[in-house]
Length: 230
Image (tube, rainbow, N blue to C red; front, top):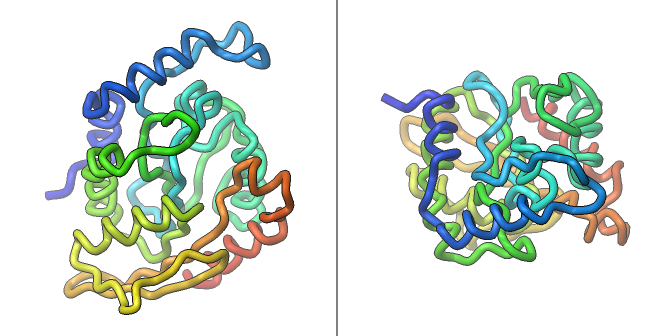
């Protein structure tokens, strides 16, 4: 019997598998950032967001050091959230176009949000071992999201994590192996499970949005496609 998402999220918040990441997140929370002076940082692993009836799963890389690690909510209070929330709202996957703090009214609709790793890693670069330690959390989420039909992977690390976890759940990974590219789309099947459409997108990080590699129109198109696939 799959665990409830509430139980999974409690395990995530209490996770101690990567002590080096727990120390880093605590250090970031302690020193903070002038922009957020006076804020009390979350400083712990960040749980997923959404409900068990979601048909779309959004997978990012990790909580941002001064985003999710500060607010305690995925894609909240940082530059990535400023791009992602409007795209979700315009395509009917969120209740509002801003995601700045917990209890600000932002909620997902027919979507669930998670990440390849749940603690903010230094320089946004988790190690392979850290990703492997965190894998059970995403596997448990896959088992609980029984209505899932579409997975939107934001960035290559999120994309690779999705493929690896789905393979662990019996989904056939095509050969040659799917390659990450913006707007790339794949359909995966597994015995006894519903087929899943995987849609890849550049991550809405400032590195991509400030350089024009990812535009708001490109991100909107990803979620229009997710809506069409439903």
